[in-house]
Each structure stands twice: as C-alpha cells, then as structure tokens.
Amino acid sequence: MTSPAPAQPRILSGMQPTSDSLHLGNYLGALVNWVGLQEDFDAYYFVADLHALTVPTDPADITRRSRVTAAQYIAGGVDPERSAIFCQSHVREHTELMWVLACQTAFGEASRMTQFKDKTARGHNANVGLFTYPILMAADILVYDAARVPVGDDQRQHLEITRDLAERFNTRFGDTLVVPEPHILKESARIMDLQEPTAKMSKSGSSDKGLISMLDEPKRIAKKIRSAVTDADGEIRFDAEAKPGVANLLSIHSALSGTPIPQLEAGFAGRGYGDLKQEVADVVVTAIEPYQQRMAELMDDPGELDNILAKGAARASEVAAATRDRVYERVGLLAAQR
Ligand code: TRP
Image (cartoon, rainbow, N blue to C red; front, top):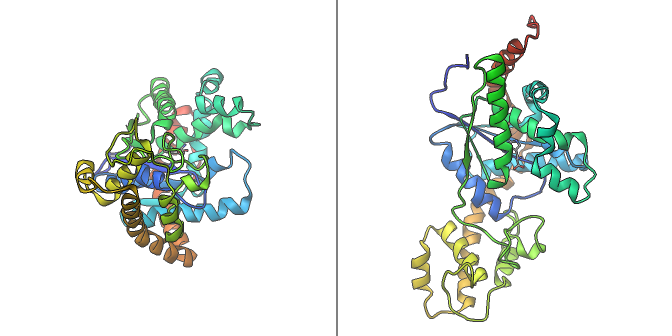
C-alpha cells in the first residue's frame, strides 16, 4: 500500500545548480509556474546537486551555485513556509531508492535515453553517473509519491521512464509506488535569444548579449534589450515567423507586465522600435528589482538560507524514508532495526 494521500496532491520539481543565475527564460518558463502551483499542491522543490556531478565541475562552483539556486527559488516567490525547499544530497533516500530502481532498469532501456545519446554523440566523455541520470531522476520523483512533476518538454522522456519504472515495480512487487502524471509546462511565453530570436534563450546560446540573467545589473539588462536584434520593416506587431525579434520583445513585455499582446500592439501602433525597447527594458528592470533585492538579502545571510534548506530536508526525509522502507521491504531486504 502507498502512504495515505496528503491533503493536497504532491508535486515535485528541481533544477540543477549549474549556473550562477537563472535567466529570464528559466524564470518565466519554470519558476513562475512553480510559484503558482504551490497554491494547489503540496510542493517539494529541490536543488539537483547530485545530478550536477554528472559533468565534471569545480567543487566550489557546485557549493556556491547550490545556495544561489535555492535562494532564487525563494526570491522568485517559492514560500519556504509552504513548500519544502532542499538539496537532493541532503535526503539520502533519493540515492537509496535509485539503487533499487537501477536493478529494475534494463541496460538497453537506459541506453535509449536521448539526452545521454546526444551528449555522447557530441563527443562528451560520459561517466556512468550520466548514464544512470534518468534513474536518479525517477527516484527523486517516486520517493515522494509525487502525483505531478512540472517540467519542460525536454524532460518528457525522463518522465516516461519514471512512469515505466513505477509501473514495472508495482507489477513485480505489488502496488507500492505512485505513477506520476507528467505536467509539461506550457510556456506562457516562449522567451528567445535577444541576438538570435529564432533560438530559445539558453545559457549555451549565441552570446551573453542574447541572454537576460536574472542577476544582471539593471543597466546591463537595458543595454542588452536596446541592442536586441529586430528587423527592417519598422512595424510593431506580433509575428513570430516573419518578425521573431519584435515578437520576442512583445512576449517578454506581456509576460512580465500582464498586458495582452493585442493591447501592446495597439499601444505601439505608429511608434518605433526604440520606444518598444525602452519600454521593455523598463518592464524587465521593474520586475527584476525586487527579485534581486531579495536575492541579495538571502545571499548575505547564508546561515538563514542553510536553515531553510535544513528544514526542507527534514520535511522531505519524512516522506522519503517511508517510501524507501516500503520499497526495501517489497524487494525482500531484511528490515533494519532502527
Ligand atoms: N533533469 C532535470 C533538469 O535538468 C532536473 C531534475 C532532476 C528534475 N531530478 C528531477 C526535475 C526530478 C524534476 C523532477 O531540468
């Protein structure tokens, strides 16, 4: 039997601590959704620090970025009083469950994961951790009996293997794990690279000029927006095909100001790109300022942040330990006398 259902269905998601700042695309694509979901769900948001070890990284970077990533969840509006915020490595049940799941995963099945195939095809010198990445991710999810997992479309295959593993486990050992529903985040706004507006905004994009980092200096943000690529026709209307640069600026404005795009088009009728860029820069800077202020407070007080992470981990461990015990028992491991 699975544990009694929580009052609200549980959701879980995580980001890897692989950068020193989220960018506007991460913020609007993921974090804003996470914040909204905590109203209706019992939410668990973690820093996937163990996943970040799958590519060689400087230890000091992992440490710093783990704090930064957790702080950005909070600065973006995840409420630690309501949602559990924690580091994956602080809840050992993730890796404990992972081992059992690894022993239920066919070698060929793991070999078919596209993210692994893509990385190795690009000449990445892959380690075994990268190979088992999806199994750790499945454990992250299943250890919380998560009903839903809000992630971007690029994680779809990982959710499928998670569901397969849960179903397989339940078939072999009896009903034990909750099979999660995917909750693929529909991008309210597709945020594109400012310099190359046909590509999604991404850390690995064209250049730093194309990317708005949530922790960029406001002046730098305004400058990047002023030098965003547009087109020669001079008319401000939303046409992602023919006018990707202008469409992107309108999307960013609309996502942050809440003004519907047709209303923006009407307001900008007869005006030039300079005006549009100035207004978008103002909207972005206004939205980002309180976020940056909260970030600075959190980073100034690492003790308080570590406290929040400790509380989150304690809350997470309670749920995770119960699942681990259930799973260990089902596969026949002799119960430890604790
Ligand atoms: N693989 C996810 C990413 O790179 C991060 C992640 C790890 C995750 N474990 C997870 C997301 C569990 C959701 C649920 O974006």
